[in-house]
Image (cartoon, rainbow, N blue to C red):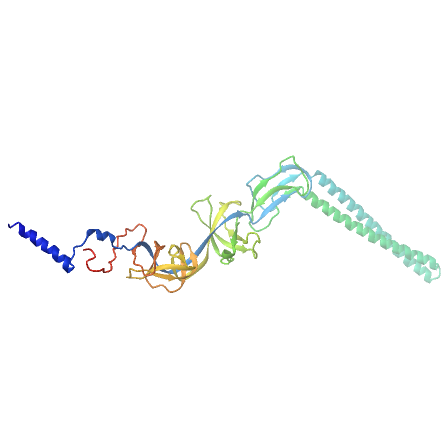
Amino acid sequence: MLLGVPLLLWLSLVVLSGTSGIFLPDPADEDDAPVAPAVIVAPVEVGPLVRTRGFSGTLVSPAVLEASALVGGRVTSVGVRLGDVVQPGQPLVQLDPEELEQAALAAEARLAVAKANASEATAAETIAERTVARVRQLREEGLTSEAEADTAEARRLAAAAAVEVAEAQRLSAEAEAAAARIRRSYATVRARFGGAGATRRVAAVTVQEGDSVSPGDPLVRLVQLDPLRAVFSATQADHAGLSTGQPVELTTDAYPGRRFAAAVDRLAPSFSESSRQARVEVDVANPDGLLRPGMFVRLTTDLEALDDAVSVPRDAVTRRDDENIVFVLPPGVAAVERVAVELGMTAGDRVQVLSPPLPGGSEVVVLGQQLLEDGQVVNPARSRGEAVAPLVLPEEAGPAGRNA
């Protein structure tokens, strides 16, 4: 009889719950409660923003000298080898000078004949002038005829003309002899470059002893190694950020981890119509001779710099309805705001926000914003490695007896 009392009490509670709206929670309903989406956020930053650009280029020598044969002949000796350091005026290749020496001697002999002829013509002119003076004196005294006086004057004029011809022949012979001496000096091919303390390196030797060469044949190539010149092409957008004297940092696979200081030296004033790019030349100091012409290099320089720029990660910007959109999470707020922004300079993984002003201390969603809407509550994490705890949102009140 006593066992029936608890049973009756339990039945009474069941009846009261059905009539008064009192209900017990269903554990299964907790799985149906909405959960805020997990997103990754990053701070809005205000500070320096630098747009750095990398280029690929090639090292070239700013001064390449092809020492060529100025006269023909047979090579008797080669005085340099590949890689040698060469000083200004240093002999490089010697040609057989015998034929040139004979030509020079013949020219000197012709010059001597021309000088003798000029002296003889001058002496003849002097005699003719004296004869004219004597005939005139006799004519004044009536001791000679007018015809004899005219004949003497004609001979004087002929002698004067002969002097002019002889003098011209002498000058021609002198020029010919000088040219022969110069040609004789061409038998020794020298390094012809100038500059205080300037040196060159032998990049190629194309002849050997016994070879026969003709005028114009290349014999030795000399290159300058310090400084060198890096050459690359810049697009229209990058060209606007380059100027003469601008610092550049250069690297090459030949020396991993080493950086070489350089500077922009020249900018082409026009763009190629085919590539729409312009040539840029950069001077690179190379006192140790580590860098060599023909090396592939990478060049880095700052094209634009801002001091107090408002920027966000590039991953925060999405494109919707032809607008650049970021989802902003103001401080102390759980719901994001959809903001259409005007973008400026891009620098690495960040982009400048020109307008509108973003709240100080706010953050932007950089991962998980694809399905977000304005005003949506999110569960933020500050990095991809940070654990995100589920955030259960409060369910809106439903009609009484929903779980009855």
